[in-house]
Amino acid sequence: MRTWIFQGNPEVFDIEGYLAASSGLITWTVARYADQISADDSVYIWQSRGQNAAQAGILAEGTITEYPRVQKDDALSANFWKQAPEQDEALRVKIRLNRIASKKEVLKREWMKDDSVLKNMLIMRQAAGTNFPVEEQEATRLGQLWRKTSIIASIIGLAVSLIETYELDRLHSPPIYAFIFISRFSRHWSLQRRTMGLQKCPVFFLTSPGEPTILSTFFPYRRRLGR
Image (cartoon, rainbow, N blue to C red):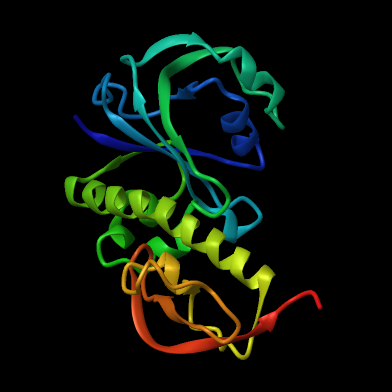
């Protein structure tokens, strides 16, 4: 079983809209490696930079359900083409989606270009194309980060909720992200403590994608908002 990256251009096709509207089964073009792509291979759906470099990265992960064959495009996809495809029938595969990333869960290309393993992926070195093989070591690293992005999104959601409810005395932004845990949500503190006036909470810094680390310090909540 191999791992692949299938890329789409958001200037040509609304990838996010297509994924969101799908019932869990999508169709993707096979332009290269048809003799190597097999049923049960893993695949990541990658959105290219388009006109906005920040949007590039992995939006979804799935499993190829068939060998490449000449077939019509998914009927649903017609609603999401910004430029009509050159031909209706082409070599394609069907993909069963296992997970679609939320906005906060997208695995950004910006993160991967600084990763010692992922920076050498074919799609990072030669971005033009549709289908890209992923080497075994790269696939392992991608899987680690992909699983952790869902955890990170949960942490961010909690932090946003806290910030909306409480006013922080001071908070200096770290290089990437800071995650704030109230003590009752952190395994490092007693679950029986409750968030009150000046209670403190640990600050978590994301030192690299998917690896939260307690670096230091506690910032006290000053008071509840809404007075």
